[in-house]
Image 1 (cartoon, rainbow, N blue to C red):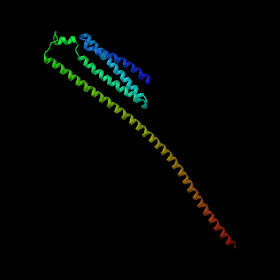
Image 2: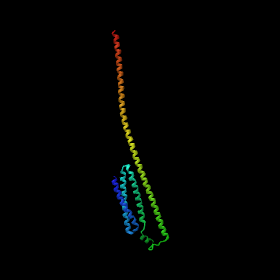
Image 3: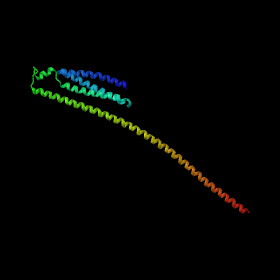
Image 4: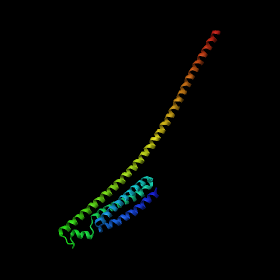
Length: 217
């Protein structure tokens, strides 16, 4: 299990390193070259997400007592993925020096209002990215809490099942004991009836003997 996880982990590390490198190049590109680079990064991010899903499935198969270490590593990888996606979004809207000059003028001169507008948009994007990262962190923590709850529920269900099995075993033993006691009681009653019958016969025999003894005289 851990060997398969480590294989996915290595592939994920190589892939994210390449994605990070390409994200850094995107703002310096323009036109068709930038479009192609964006498409390549999108494809690699999807591959990285698929690797994370495979790693997550492997972690769920690991015994509970050894799962904590791998779960912590998965949280780090998911946080890294969130940061990569945020960096990718920022890099897509970032302009290279050449494109910026074309937008603002050949000599790079622009009005004060245009610069203020660009700065305002940049700040808004940064605030949105921070909110996304915070939301992603909350989602990761919520997922971990849900996983812990499921593990506790699973353990409780096992305890209930064991208690139910013990109750069934106790019921079976009580049934056997009840049958044994019923048989013993039946035999005791039968023995007492026999004793009473024998006593009556003996008394009747004694009475007959006395009767015939007096009659013979």
